[in-house]
Image (tube, rainbow, N blue to C red; front, side, top):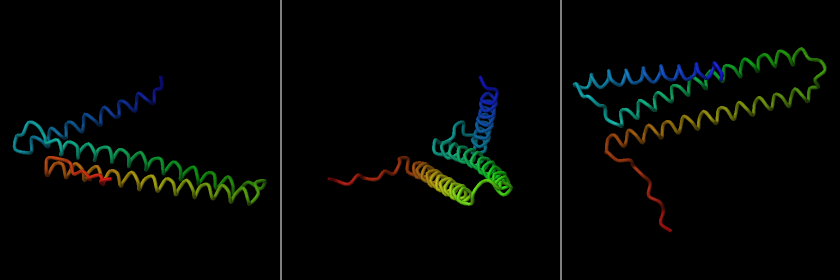
Length: 135
């Protein structure tokens, strides 16, 4: 339907193929092993997803900052908008920046948790789980 969505699919396919190629290269560097350990594969997948997220998030931040700059320039040149209206817009910008930063922190924390889970699983062969409190 949309040309843009096909470009996204092609981009993801190319990245996936390059990840597979890198995994094959890493396995050949490990003394000729034909397959990698699941924990190593999972760690590489997490790293790949984190890098993809970080790049997309940074692009979004750049777009928002550019849009904010254009809106601020427009507001400076607009005599018909009262100061109260400008203050409301400024508060709105601060609120979405705060929400954006909190979202990024939450995602980063969850990537760290996922990575720690797979590192722990790779060392012991099983995932560490919290025991539920007895009632």
